Amino acid sequence: MFSSRPNANDVHGTFSRPWVTMTGQTWKLVVFLILCILVLAFLVLMVLAMDKTSPVPKFNEATSAIFGVLSGAAALLWLCLSVRCKACRARVAWHVLKTADAGKWGWQLMSLRVCPVCCHAPGVGQGSNSEREASSRVV
Ligand SMILES: [Zn+2]
Image (tube, rainbow, N blue to C red):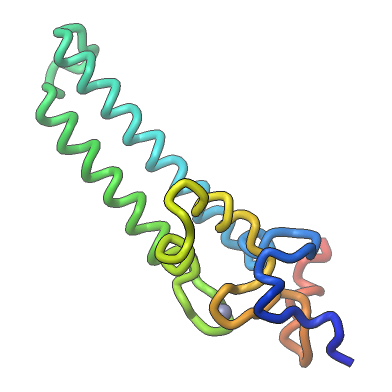
């Protein structure tokens, strides 16, 4: 009856859509990417300030560096604290950051098909919860 229910070995399985998308949390990754772009913008401002060609004279190299570091910290905090499993409330992005290789965590987060902590797969499983999730996707 529950043969389609994933197990711990299916964390990066072959279900059709990524877990982040299935749980409606893609916008949180977009916010993270926007904050990362902000970090790059402050880095460019810092370099331009060092070269005395900054279009924003109030942002000297120290100010740009401080805002860049704060933006980076905000991006990382946002990602780690906001991406959560709706079933077990685990901080999934934080879990992936802790357990994945340094250069692969982003790809692993995007390729998740089930929660890596509880193996919950949105739309798969028993009860009305999965039926409600499936019907909410139909537009
Ligand atoms: Zn979970």
